[in-house]
Image (cartoon, rainbow, N blue to C red; front, side, top):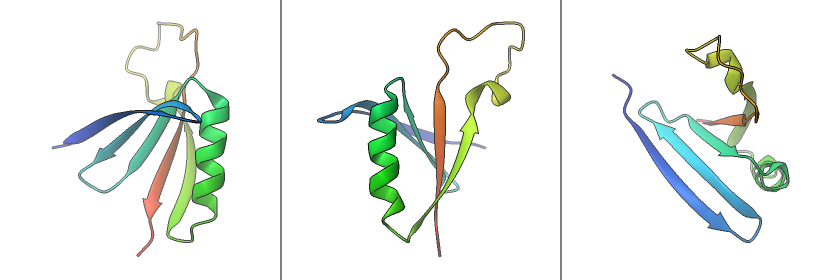
Length: 80
């Protein structure tokens, strides 16, 4: 089972979505690269987070559909 919570945010750096699953993985999604860069900068200063960048197209179920706007996801793990 993969339960997921999806949150939508409107902030001073831009609009973004945050997704969290039952395993504690957190994904930030946005069409605004500047917003993701700011989130990346802020979280990179916190030693409790580890960043892993993934390309959403690698996880797409429909390979034949061309994605016109790429969404880059950042997967974060809370370090123990």
